[in-house]
Image 1 (tube, rainbow, N blue to C red):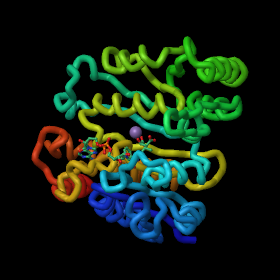
Image 2: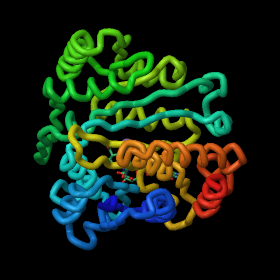
Image 3: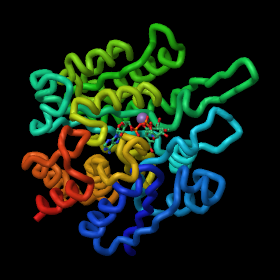
Length: 344
Ligand code: NAD
Ligand code: IPM
Ligand code: MN
């Protein structure tokens, strides 16, 4: 049976970076059946809702889902009764059971000078943020009255156990569990559960606990001290944008969101729809290309193809490719050409 991939261009720079990525996908998986669906703000405009039942069903029955980005000022609202593009993204993650979000941060020597951090601080950094993606404050009960509002941060032992396992399985030298156990009850359950999984199932892998505020500081002062960082949904969201700057730009960071069973994974850049540069053809497509590499590796088991694409991105950067976010002048099309040339 042909490989079925659902693509979701979304909003802002989303369609601009997805288009060349679909061309790369066709090159690596010539028999792929590619099905595009409107998603996010575009789906609100077309259907009044960010994620239609149709689109969710298509994603559920696909082999993998490739998403660019959603959101934008057109749909920004503080009115809780209005639909938001981001609801589609959260609904898709939840609907596909994608509790483990892997965000690898591997700064390339060629880009050390594109980072605001000093080269000697970045040198040797190779870390993975394992972000819990379907629980915590994102999905707890929300309330809103005229004068108050609340978001519940809730985790079950089972939710913590499975993301802890993902982290230990990905670890090479160490797992750093990041929490706020000095203040939050949910963090105390987090820490206790991670310790229990460690003792029971992975006693040989070193485990440390770091409070989230300290982790934020160490990410920019001593990033080489990290291997795998495992953390709850919102801490992982914030820390991964911070960690992106080790690579020079948020436009470099890919992600893979995976679930338990044989269901499809979701592959998307960490960055958003970048409304400030949308429509200009200048977005950095590399986080999107690298997300395709993760799709090839984790979604389709095509390790060689994934490696070839990652090497081509590295080579293009080595040869001087720089989009504006990296301090250069290359357009999205020129960046695509450079990667295609490096692929040979
Ligand atoms: P953003 O990541 O879209 O942009 C932050 C800054 O980084 C902007 O200056 C932008 O121009 C730049 N940037 C981001 N990606 C880039 C790229 N590929 N090339 C060059 N520059 C890039 O974050 P934001 O502005 O806070 O959010 C904009 C919208 O995106 C919001 O609606 C937000 O909810 C949404 N968002 C969506 C996703 C997603 O779809 N996965 C992720 C994050 C934010
Ligand atoms: C991300 C984004 C999303 C998140 C938003 C758009 C809902 O910031 O994928 O990092 O917070 O998870
Ligand atoms: Mn984010």
